[in-house]
Length: 246
Image 1 (cartoon, rainbow, N blue to C red):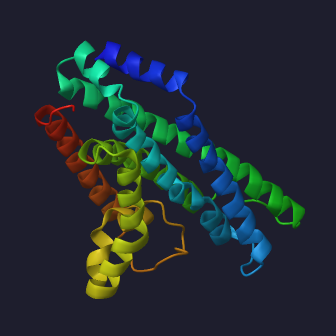
Image 2 (image 1 turned 30 degrees about the vertical axis):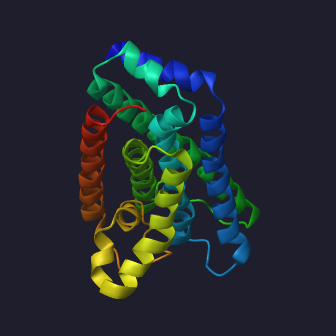
């Protein structure tokens, strides 16, 4: 397993597209935090701090796409054959990808949080407001957002294993987030709370959620997201072991 993990790290060091994708996450958080202040709709208090840093979790869409690249990207560039020839046991290969990409998803969330804190603190200072660094709600939101990024990166590996077309996998994942969960919410109401993106929102929610108040409690969102992550991991391993490479 250590060799497989080092192999995945080597792959990440030698290609640029994942890094360009992950670099977009801090930019999203910076833009979201700035937009919250510029809009001027809310007082710059502890609740606003938590809402500004809730964008760390929303950046998980980039982590999801990053995870999809782990497997679907290899099919796209036809390197998956060499990967499986060097390690015929496919389960450990997928396991290494799940671990490495989840860790990088968490690190991306941490970097995004660091950038978001810096940008938010700068805006608070520019507006003459003291930034409450010790606010527990803000740090809880940040922790939830980092975990959300890690979970979505691992789930992306599963999506990429199930849908081997890179474009198809990304399109399906984004369509699910943008359309399917919203439609399910309109048709069934509370059932939408149990779907992956809404569970992530609950985990990384601000003290007063910006997008929806109809969410699971934070612990519930975290539990549901862990279950989804495990399900996608099992599907990724099982599908990769049974399916032909070609």
